[in-house]
View (cartoon, rainbow, N blue to C red):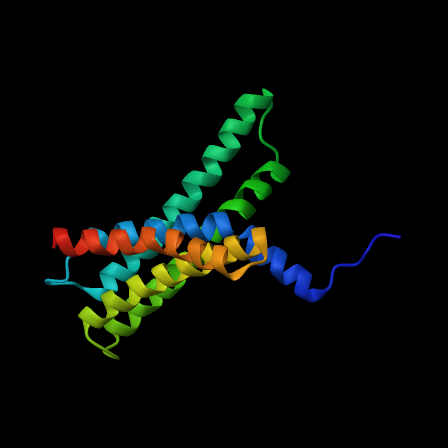
Length: 168
C-alpha cells in the first residue's frame, strides 16, 4: 500500500518545487531594480515593469522548454507538455509579488518612493536568503550549511543591490 503524503510533506514539496522559479524570479527582480533609478521614480510604473518583466521571463522559459522538448522529441507539443512547462515556469511569478506590492503601496502613498524601492529589494533578497537556507538545510539537515546557503544565495541579491548603488 503506498504511503499517503501528509499536508506538511506536500507543503514542503511545493516549496521545494518552486525553488527554481522563485530564485530565477528574485534575481530577475533585482536586475530590474538595479536598472531603476531612485530619482524621478514612478512606483506605479515600476510595479508594472517588475511584474511584466517577470511574467515575460516566465513565459519565455515556458516557451523555450516547450520548443526544446518538441525539437528533442521531433513531435508537436501537446497540452500535457505545455501544462508541465507552465507549471515549472509560473513559480517565477512568486518572486514578483512582494516587490510589486511594495511599489504599489508606495504609489498609494503609504510610504515614500525611496522606501518602496528599498522594500522591493528587501523582498527579493529575503526570498534569496530563504531559499539559500532551505537548500542548505534540506541537503544536510544542519544549520551551518543552511547559513552558508543563505549567505551565498542571498549574497547574489546583495551584490546586485550594491551594484545598483554603484551605478546610481
